[in-house]
Amino acid sequence: MTTTGSEVGSGRLIVLHDPDGNPAWDGTFRFVSFCRADVDFDMVNDPLLSEVGWTWLTEALNDAGADYHDASGTVTAVSSRSFGQLATEADRAEVEIRASWTPVFSTDDEVASHIAAWQALLCTTAGLPPLPDGIIPLSGRLDH
Image (cartoon, rainbow, N blue to C red; front, side):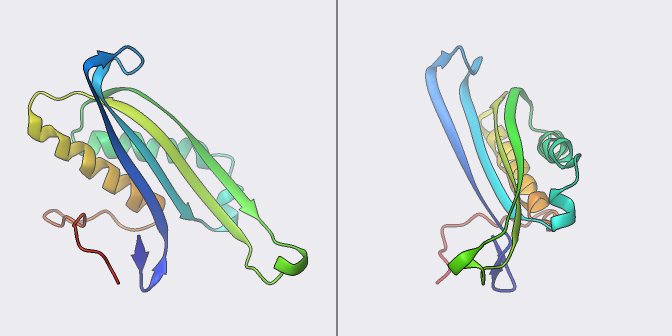
C-alpha cells in the first residue's frame, strides 16, 4: 500500500477452503490475514497498542457486516535501531496484525464483506482513512 510514492503498509489475505470442514476452524472456510505498517515511536511504546490493534480487526469485521467466529491472532509492536555499518539506517517502529477467522456465509456473495473488512483493517493499520463507499482498490492492475 503506497501513498505519495512511499509505502505506508503492506498486507496479505489468504482464503482457505476445506469442503469437508476443518475441526480447528469449525467451518469449511478460514480467512488468514497479515497487515504491517510503520508507526510513530510514541505509538509503538503505548502499552495499549496491541489491544487497540485487535479492535481494528473486530470493528472492521463488524462494521462491514461480516459474520464470523473463532477469531484468533496476534498484534506485535516493534522498534528497531541500527548500529555499526547500518547506523545510517533510519530508526523504525512497526505494528503487525496477524489474524484468522472463520466466516459465516448465508450466500456466496457474502465473501465481499470479509474482503471489505480486511481492506478497512489494512487502511486503519497504515493510518489511512477508510475507503469511501463505491471505491474498490483491489484490481488486477500492477503499478510499474
